[in-house]
Length: 396
Image (tube, rainbow, N blue to C red):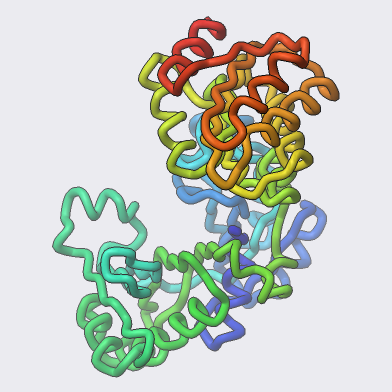
């Protein structure tokens, strides 16, 4: 689960991290009062969407020469002007795709006198099986660009889960970020704070880009991107309350109600599969034969008829879907249960696009019989290759 920057900063502030004062708003009428709560005279007006690259983004409605989604303001009046242009308009960034995201929230933040911009993140390093810090002196840039062009400027420090962030670990990070004086003192305190927040709140990513050294030598978290492990949210009611469903795909929200692993994609062939590996293989073979999958959907091994029906409804609700491929290998999951769910869903919502079903495994004969006896326009497939060819041909 992702949250907005202002929410992430509030979480980090609760652990003692240094963040600027700021006020979130959802209406232009709130902008002046928000700015007057801050010291000034420099303000930052930040679009709050679940995507990176906001500062370099462009608003669809304002033309190519308009400023981006993060803007400086030197007066309260300028804050109001920016808010008027930004709220309700569509911000397109490198991470939103061409469709962009509508800006429904802004964060009015106190400005900072910046001396240096640094990059810092915490993530789960699967190569070593530990939580690790990633640090670079190249803050404010896309870390992918830094990794490609100057990988030697990225330092990774894995943390022993039994020890936590030791003084030696913090020292390595200070060295990597070239911190000295007051900034080094701040860093020695900040790194354990961030690790504590990451582990106690079950984060999957904490990215600070940039972490800044101000002209007075102090460190400040200038931006914060945080994602949480969805499987751990049952432990954190305070974090669940931060969810902004307006930033999520409506189909993904519906899928989460049924504990379905669903991710919307840009293609036109809907997929319903059991097992993440098989789902990936199904998407790959669709691409191999020249089409694009419209979704990733893993119904899981323990799905019942109701869950399968819900999954089918979610796929058919996508107007981009021009055909559907159901690919089930019955191990724990029984083929007849899948067949019953598909038939029930088709009878309830109708079938307006081609449907190809490949079943194999437990109760496969029962499943095929249910499909054959349904009287529905369902195309059977012998194997995955056959299924992919048939659905691609049917979509055209």
